Length: 250
Image 1 (cartoon, rainbow, N blue to C red):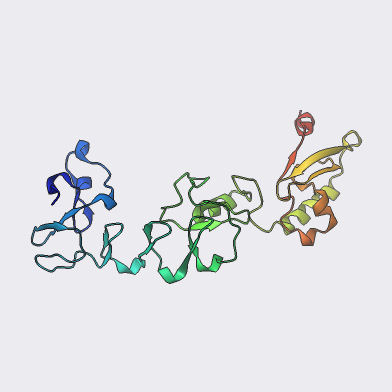
Image 2 (spheres, one colour):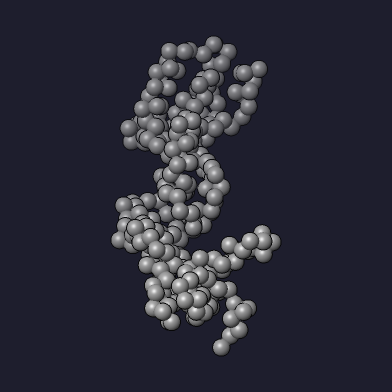
């Protein structure tokens, strides 16, 4: 039998080392390495299990033998995902594991999302919290990149509608482009600025030569100009291939 004094120990799944009174003695406990636990009722030290081998008390309503994880609040819908290798919340029946993305997603996204390899094993591009084991709701943008739902909503309230990673549209922008088109028609440019410039559409990755206008984001790429209704997200964010805007502003 291994020396229990040298092994991480838990009280009912609580991290004992994390509750030590001296801050210097505290450290993060690797749950999978836990070998012994102490029952908080009878104080019996024993191997990790759901039920105390001495007094029979239930150490946790939810117990994962793999993660060595205990929890009394079963309303969270805890479940262990073998592919992820961790316990998650929300109910197993409401989630599926995407092998390419490398994480569990809501069942509503099954066969209904753009896969990006290991997309969840990254940090949220807004708050920079690691997404894979985050307990916050996560959304998958049309480009396949992921971020926290609340971060995405915060971006929208600040009129930011592009993926922070690839700059592709994250919403249907067709009505917005039509509004900008009307503004362009209502504000003709001075004759000296009636020139063509090269732009790169971040949505379809097409390079186009278009007429310059100070409302740069309203430029339509060639794909967009053909039929706006067929490409509602196209030209969400167009980037100039040159410095004409800076020249105009100066």
